[in-house]
Length: 324
Image 1 (tube, one colour):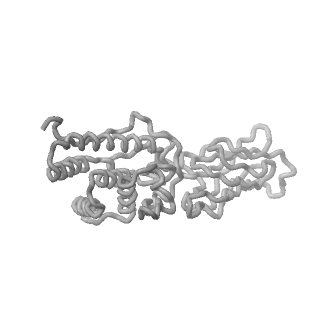
Image 2 (spheres, helix red, strand yellow; image 1 turned 135 degrees about the horizontal axis):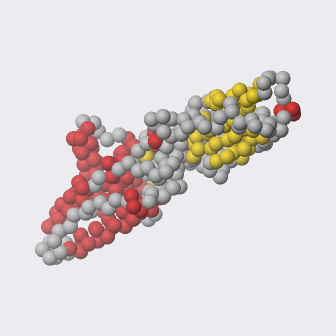
Image 3 (cartoon, one colour; image 1 turned 180 degrees about the vertical axis):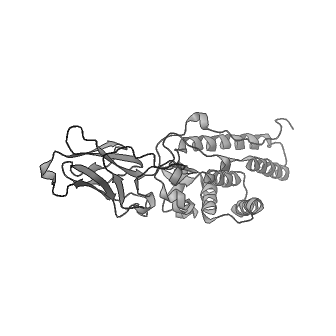
């Protein structure tokens, strides 16, 4: 009996190498389903990138175990094909039992099929998963920065008639009210295949980097403090006290790194994504983006899928009366 016993997928950089897939089936389930995950060889982003977040070349070996073992690839008209997945990487050849899928650079689920080339013989499958982080919120977040800037302009204009001391006090009072109303940490975005909930739950993609969704609140919190003319120490202490009050623990190092980036942007301006540099922005003492990542975020691949505008949230801001 001629058959494909198994398909084996392996890679030196994979988290769970090797993976053996049953022959003559291509229904391998959904590897991103946290309740009933399917099967895939998994490669995490952190395991293939360099210090500048550039994905390095790597291979995935695909082997068809065909029985009886006396059959060779020259005896059949076998073929390999990538049937779905990102437009990245390529098979080094297709007409042998052993092939390599070389240099995928984009996150997502890659699906492969092996065909013995015999009439009526079912194909065999294998999955390669580069788990996607949450959707790209860069445009959304930019709109929030713009809205907060407009709020601050309006706030300062309404305080022009006050004395310097009163203006200073009112500015901070209304800024603090706004900060207290921020609620980014309660958001969990998911859209289509992004994020892969089994591996990258609670993440978003910002400026091409994957972060925990709670970092959106931390960045905006510190940004607002800087724009409202608080000292960074005040923002740092406020964050620590709030975290201690709500959880009994101090903020983690990744949260504190997000404070640094948000405050630097609020203080110095420019292009926000510059403050997400892997090497940091030395002139502003900004932590590199890797410092802002949890281990979950480090594992995920950036998504290019935008957050639908219908999921955008507009957060409250606090203003004094227009005519005090």
